[in-house]
Length: 456
Image (cartoon, rainbow, N blue to C red; front, side, top):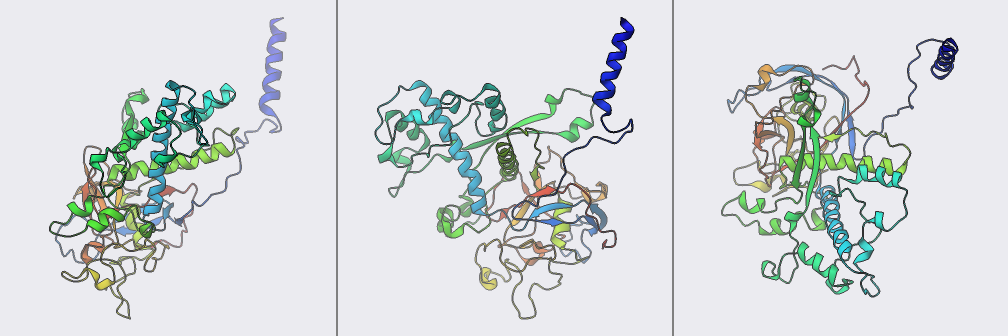
């Protein structure tokens, strides 16, 4: 009898695993993969380049000696992240927080006696409204938890009512009163929100630290971060003493006239939070589009490393001073090639006092706009003046969590031309926002796009 059982098991193994491979190792057949270029990004084909200052270091910092390095291929935003794009992040988090508060209040409120607008019960958690199967509901919660800290399903089918005269009931009024500042903190007849309530929470794993230890408990390397998402508009005042920049403080982020301008007033942590949200936003869409495919993978959006940024800024030009080559900041028609401070006290000689639209001026050889000037850009690298001496030559990056000084690159509208040079390094503290620092994101390219005849 035992021998018969063994024969049956062996037969099952052959029929279940063998299939049509005739006993040969043919590999696991996966789905066909086709690269998808993210909206607003260009593909930067990897390669080797000479990183660092190839010409005279006029500042004498000696923090960027030349070194040949190689970076892989990746996608990069054509422009700096704009106010409009960052507002999509802010509004999504804001609406999530408001809906969460409304849903929680609905659990303790009665049925209500709303008029044409209904009641606060319209905003109750969907898992208490609909008859979804438990399995489907749990799966949806898995990827909606980035916007719902309680792990319950928010109701996005009903529009939030912002107009006070249209509030449906008293319970709704109480929730919205918590969202807005009290009357004595508002002015000019405007009802202002308490933007400090709108925070984005996300988790990240320190893979490099985990790989260098024998600790098998992954939870020791997973860290949750909570970040306020609204830009600090007061930077327009704090960055410049004895200067009148109140209009920029009031309008730059909010007014539609500046939608296509680069976002500023975001610190390094906020730029990282935006990158994570962008990843989750795309991942949620793909999972929602095909519920059965719960293993759908999306490559993470992130800040570029310092080496990736400089490689991209050079646009394929070897040993160039600027993204357009150089050594001059004007073209043959005496027009400035970037937005910066060209003359002492004269910010507008390049026809711009502050920032300009993110797609202004000509793009570099990779199709990237404003890699020099307009706003400086956060990168995912910690600043150390000696890091070029010991960093790897293969996809180099030095990012020490304990080092709060993070590299910013490219120079800005308020900088002199030295900071526009593609090899110039600068830094700011990770928790500090400025009126002249923004960012752009990258995404890994899966596969090999190297042109072996195109190393420069």
